[in-house]
View 1: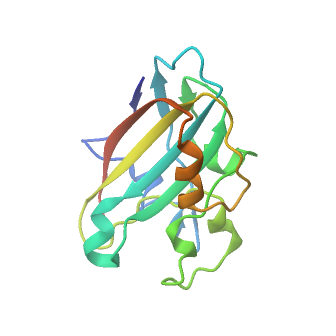
View 2 (view 1 turned 90 degrees about the horizontal axis):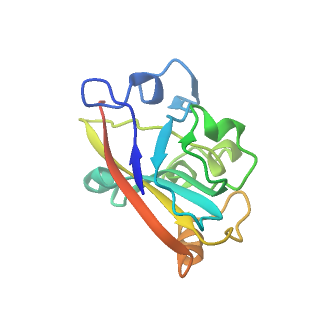
Length: 164
């Protein structure tokens, strides 16, 4: 399985990042499209994570931007999928006690790259699973990881750069 994301000059287009015109509480909320090639034949669902490990020096932890589960197998996750998807999506790091963003929107949607200091590398991972995950909206990353155990047929990861 391979995943690709269309970049502009090597970076995620600004409509999905801190320079986006569509924001909620200052955060970009239009998720970017993801192309998926060679999905394994026995795939029952897909799961998605988008994590900023470059945030660790600033925040003390990897910053979770998006978690989605039980995505139907498809060759393209379309633009703005997070806001239109009815399936389970997990809490991103804006819901952390370290931020004053306690808003239910961020418990179940994409909050795009918004690097505060310099360009960051975001790790996008798509998992092909042999069954659906038993998760409900607002799930946490640890529950996501626990549910992946024994279900991953294949996974693909990609580093996506975003400017500040």
